[in-house]
Length: 388
Ligand code: NDP
Image 1 (cartoon, rainbow, N blue to C red):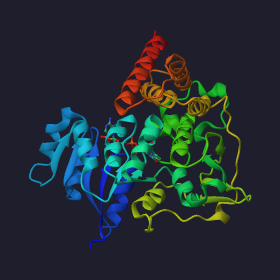
Image 2: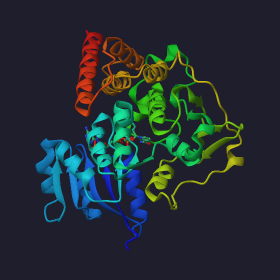
Image 3: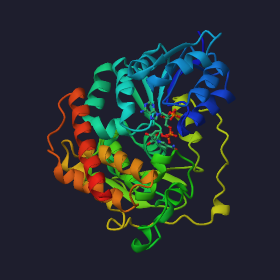
Image 4: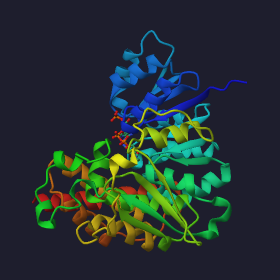
């Protein structure tokens, strides 16, 4: 029997994708890549497909399809494009799908893999934020195993006693606080995209880096945690931990608090998900507690980081609130990165969008996308008003 795990990487050219590829490259006797996808980065995608002799390479942007075919000329790699192509990459026969597309765009292909009962290494938190109930119901129906890649959820997964879930009092998500947690609120108005994406501990894609700076990322993670673990909404707590060494904790009824620690390098949770239930070497600096000397903690400031509060409120509100929160945030972060709005406008756009939407829970996947589009339109209109 072959011991090589075959993998499809959705979002192979991104930050999580690159770390996944790095681990595969270092472990050629354990992993092989079957399929790879990107949005627009044809050259990087084609180079990876050639390097790993992938069966399928998919470019989401259909206008770049001929470029991809040209870049793969003379190889046996099948080039595909668009949403159908992404779904084909998710459905390719393989042992594990790494879901690392950024944003709600990751939902359709990841759900396609879930419906086939595959093992999913889930980095794309937006799947659970936008369609958590539907997604987990489908996973239950098909028997798909979801292995969380987000470092906090991966930490919780490693220390959560699923057999005795009722003994869990709470889960504690740690947050670095991003680059601005100690800045005064009045200094945040004029921060630039370059300052916002300069995360003190983690090297990540642009969108999630801005989300870390606004702390929306932690809010999205609270929603993600609610869907991944059998806990109630009020059993999820957030604590600032600027060193990003404790990746999260689970507190039990006897007072024990179990934590997973490690250097802040995504290759640890990715290695865990790729090798599960085994473990493999990961090229991360080992943790030296004496060198660290101190691990510190603080309460998050929900007035300064309104995005975190909006996300926690959206989880409690339920219905379409988490989905609309995510859609408005994606629109606002993109506008901020293009310097069309200021940093503090991100939370204003999200809040104003949430004030305008109908909170009815989506009843189907197509309804998720309808509501997502509706929220995006509202957020776009708000941006136009802000610019006027
Ligand atoms: P990046 O922006 O670095 O990469 C995103 C990937 O998705 C790229 O391959 C990109 O292709 C592709 N992509 C972008 N838009 C689309 C689209 N519309 N359709 C299809 N593919 C698309 O993101 P990250 O790697 O930082 O994050 C990926 C996911 O993982 C996010 O959900 C994030 O929240 C989560 N995550 C990330 C962590 C990190 O450390 N980066 C940590 C924990 C979770 P192209 O290169 O062509 O643009």
